[in-house]
Image (tube, rainbow, N blue to C red; front, side):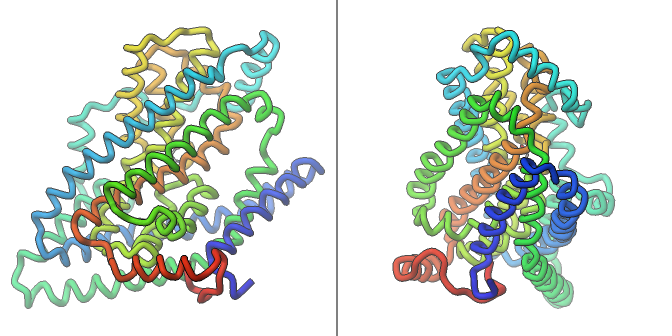
Length: 442
Ligand code: ASP
């Protein structure tokens, strides 16, 4: 076990966790798993979440201060926004198209419908009025990025505000006299190394955390509801898979001119952690580590792109919202006109920008999309029973999307380590997937 690469260990833990959770579900010791094993997973999520704010703050500050050309930030910002919005719009469109073709919400017998609606009550029904059920205005979204009090933003983990303050501080660090800037930069560079090391240390626990999280989810899972909603789940999964394999691969090849296999291989630990934690924000330290160490992206670009991405770029969530909206409409026998479906593209794209990277956030924002086209919010209760599973899958796609955008920007800014890229490609050609690596390697 010690000699295996970290991503292989995580994968094994995932498979073992699924098996164990399934046995617990069938043999009736699910409550034991949920009470005694899930806390190990919770501890892991808390540990990586603990590093997110300090790591993002320090990495962004150091990264921005090290940029040769500060004006490049504006250029990167505009390109990033265009990429995010267009990729999200494509993903909702794929979700809508698939759902219209497959019609997962049509054809339920009256009895099954009742069963699903009854279940909705026990699963908590529509999400509690969470943040921003109404469509946020662009003005509010933008104004909200400027922190009134940066210390509070850091303390409360407000990512966009933290990013804004860190970037501004990094820029100002380059504007003051070098002899004054030097000790500050040295301090934060040291702090950055500490947090990167902390991620290394915490990642040693990843296999145990992933095992516990997955075992608890599967043990708790109502398999009956999965059978009833199998067509809906399959539509979301096919959409996510199609989007990831076709759209991401094409973007990587055409815009980032990078090897697709190398990319997916390098990002695997982050995808697995995203899958098991259902949180792109909590996965951020791992994604950053994969980007700089496995994909050869300069830390300045990686820290900026990934922390912004984890807060605003949610392709997987948008695709799921497209499918879920059509599913619920079909379930209630509501026909969505083309104009309404375009409205879904618009609101789901906006909703994705406003979705935070935590478990279940996509469902809260789904309410906003449903409301925009007049589909009953109660429908959310019908799909709630399988949401955790779909959340795991869409989070893995969200994290992948952030990294795809990062590769495009890094390539266009000449911030991809070509040496690392070619070294990895050569290694790939020479060695089979699961090879021996250092215990610290992720
Ligand atoms: N859990 C997702 C994420 O963290 C957001 C969602 O619920 O769709 O990326």
